[in-house]
Image 1: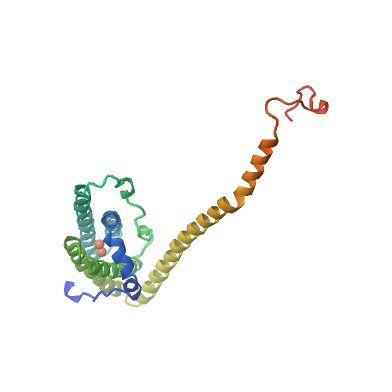
Image 2: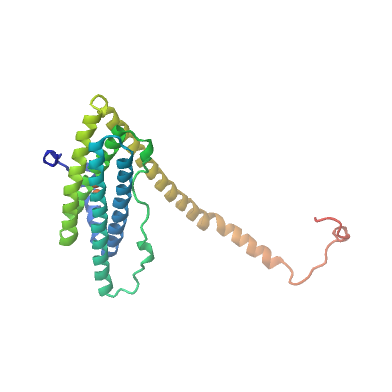
Length: 254
Ligand SMILES: [Fe+2]
Ligand SMILES: [Fe+2]
């Protein structure tokens, strides 16, 4: 099985973003943050695959899923341990302004997968594409980490496993669904594309919202603030008499 690995290559999109990845990984604090997030993502994926192992009725797939889940847990450990080492380097440099609260992992970055609702075919198609995407990105990360050999070695080691995951999922997708495996792959592709679009749209909506609120704050609010200040200046200080019509007994609220 392992001998039939597919050759994972970075996609054109990931290659184009290489300078951005180099910039992101170049900073030690961001590196720690990314490594911790990756640790979270890997363990999350491992849990989904463990659940898939419980649900599948195919004994061979169950064995492979268990092996796969163990790999993902191991990846998570590797990322977290490395994050810990880099964090210790940061502390040795005694940077008092370093805030650890943002180290809390953010979104796991995985498309939410309802494992119980997936068939063996759709699960394998989803896993194949996820592993392929991971292998593509890890190839780039390994390449941009020349200045940090221990982290580079971790990516190299994990990349080796991701290639195997990518390969076995496709092989067994074709085995369990020889007639419809292409359809499963296209569905998984479209689902990932849709979820990617939703993530992008959410980020864009957040950015547009921030921009509009900032414009409102600096352009729309100042005239109102000026008018309020002018009205306040015209107010007489202290108590002032009111007209007799409004000075009746208080029988109602207004
Ligand atoms: Fe992994
Ligand atoms: Fe994997």
